[in-house]
Amino acid sequence: MATDAHVSPVRVPSTEPTQHASSVESIVSSFEEADHQQVDLSGHTFEDWLCLGLFWIMALLVFLQFFTRYVLNDSFAWTEELATYSLIGVVFIGAAMCVRTCRHIQVDLLYRFLPHAAGRVLATLIDLVRTAFFAYVAWLVWRYIQLVGDEPMTTIEWNKSYVYWLALFGFVLMAARSVQVTVVNWRQGYSNLERPEAYDKLD
Image 1 (cartoon, rainbow, N blue to C red):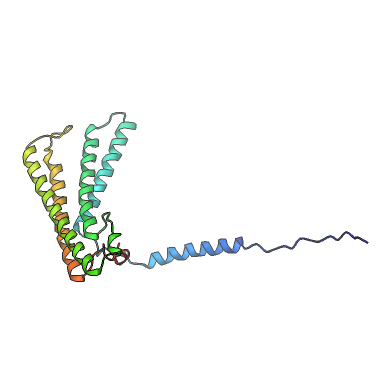
Image 2: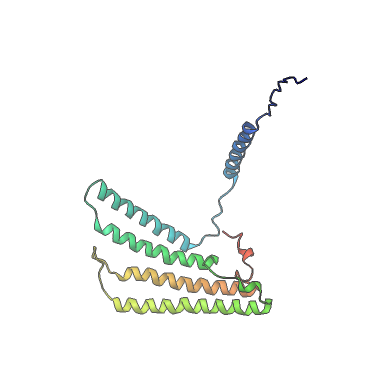
């Protein structure tokens, strides 16, 4: 004889509130830990601050251009040109920062299959070629500045060579930092090409 049995569904306690509370607590604790951590600026050098200053000059020029164009309906033409020149300074000074911290794009696949001695020789050769390249480009920029002479900017009566002086300074700094990195790699016995994991922890 068949009987109809009413089976009540089993209620499983939800863990969503608990998980939500734990995630909120972890976020709060991370903020508390950040408050107690001291900011270390010892790893930054003068080119970092120079690049930061040029970046903020560029940002202010872009804001001024936006304000004069869309609020005053009378755009200052020189803001766009000077913002572009500031970006050029940020690029070349920032490139020197990347040379110092070994953050330029590079291919290290070959070093996984090379013996240590061969990899060391190849990495040293690349350090020397990189330094020579930066020094050569710096010389080319110097020659170009001499050719430009007193050519004025487009929208303002300033010498256009000021912009190329920023590029020259960037390449000279890249060459100097490349020499510094080459010496460090030689003393420690490896470069970021040979042991990229050793550079992952660097800021």
